[in-house]
Image (cartoon, rainbow, N blue to C red; front, side):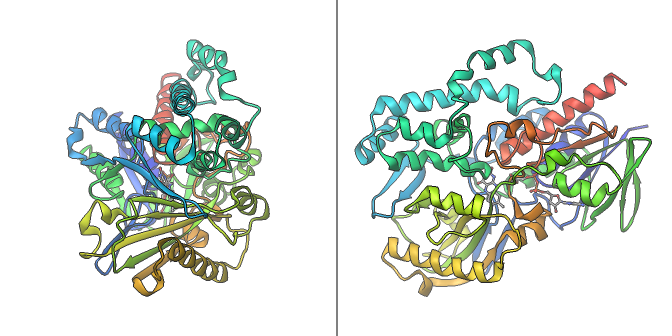
Length: 492
Ligand SMILES: Cc1cc2nc3c(=O)[nH]c(=O)nc-3n(C[C@H](O)[C@H](O)[C@H](O)COP(=O)(O)OP(=O)(O)OC[C@H]3O[C@@H](n4cnc5c(N)ncnc54)[C@H](O)[C@@H]3O)c2cc1C
């Protein structure tokens, strides 16, 4: 008889796990509280406008391809484009430029616009690529919690190259000492936000995040970001995975330190293995209330959250690209507000994403679908209704000023998401987007493992566990958890 596997949650980590479990020969059932697959990779239609509600920067398509290859499916079924330009940057003094993907052109832009030495930037990006190449087999594609994953040769290479990671320094310290212009440092500091951390606290090793975007490229799935979960769900269904939507798991049944199955309002479902894609803190609090919690890990500082306004704008702006940043004047104070003060900052950096630039069907002719996001603190009881209203005014004024247009008068559709909504819609504890923050040099070692050390048959996937935040890492978490399961089965 086939062994039964249950996956709790159809976020991208849970979907990737369902594919891997089915390929391994398990009969897989995925329980999802919402009525759709993808979790935070969600999409909404408002009148003639379609919005990606969560992620908008797609990097690392090779991790999706790996799932296609595993299933023997043709990756041509996953249509996407590499953007010729990464981001358009707006600085508070009115300075504006766009970074092209092409390496020589990128070096020219940073030289001409910011006075950077081409060689310095080229070396920085080469080093980011090297660091990513050395670190990813160890930190991103393997468990840090199983000695055998730390294969001797890889570990030795990583250890031998430790000085290259500037372990004692922060991202900002290295960026400020590398680049001539503070604006360049601000631009590279921005990559800390890709896993919800502060560049003034996160270790310099995380400067390698820029590798994915600036060396490999920014991609856009032609059917929107939801194409990622939709296609992975398709792979899973072809392998016989069953999806039970609108069915929230209420308890993981444990007996004799071994998982026995899960309970929902509809019934009890026996299982040999359970993979939780639910926020790991909530998995313990809500589904395993009688089990001992790994408090030290669960109490780590959480990543940032966000407020996002989705605006249907009845005009197009040729000066804007798909991805745009409107920087704050004082980035350090902004991050201090987000992480230490847990307050919204009055001059936030704004990210504006417009997919209709490339996918005309995402907005009516001559109009644009604006996704306006600011990083925010997590929900620690702030008055979010008031704060969200305040931020809306600030954001619209700031973008209107930069574009020299009254944006308010152009809005014909509108909705919003804030930290409270992130917690309610996706069960993300206190609205944190990426689980734990990487705001200290030990953070990578203080994420929850992809398996339970106390309960046999229980595994964890998604951004709240190792290796951390973002779509590529969530997909990898499933690969690591699967490897751990395979080892556990082998060793009985
Ligand atoms: C505004 C925003 C912007 C972002 N931008 C980017 C970006 O540009 N690039 C990038 O790579 N990443 C980005 N991210 C992060 C990215 O969305 C996440 O890293 C990733 O999608 C999280 O995947 P996950 O597998 O951890 O699961 P989640 O997406 O968190 O899904 C978990 C799923 O579990 C379900 N669930 C929870 N509890 C239960 C239960 N008890 N029973 C059944 N189901 C349950 C939830 O309903 C949900 O569907 C962004 C996120 C947000 C919110």
